[in-house]
Length: 223
Figure 1 (cartoon, rainbow, N blue to C red):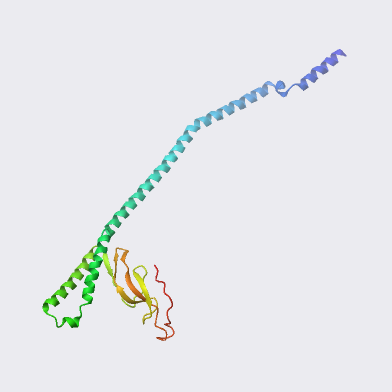
Figure 2: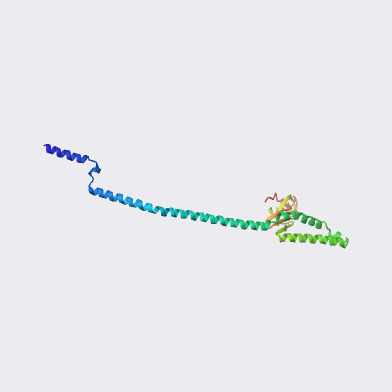
């Protein structure tokens, strides 16, 4: 009976032992192999890290290079545009000063009546011809430097970029057309140096013309 009780106690102790204490040599071999595999993977990752780092640095340098090239190209385009603008508009200030001279010559020629000139001495006629030639020469020289005269005529379409409306009056011209020119304008290259001063037509006066003409209403004269 004592032997049977000792046998039962030993079996009970064996069942109550932790699993780690009851592992077989085969289990230890499997665990060792798993640990060895994990160590190998870790070493492979460590070996790949420098490659990934160099790849990231290469991508960063490539991105910086592309940005630098784009900035250099934009700077070159800006410099080219600035040079072109300087070449085209360098005479803007001088041209504005010369507009007064052109206006005075134009007024002098407008005051010369052909009928009145028929009875004047030749010296006066020569003076008038000289003024006319001076005006033409001045306009020609200004055009050579990109400054062109804007001389609209009654009936032309109003352009707010080149014309300045100082009044809106009824006329025989359609609404929105130029009715009267008060002062010529000038442009330099594609910019307005001085807008031509004009009066814009609002259409025939009330009671004049047919019903289709109408008064024309208000015309937008803002650029």
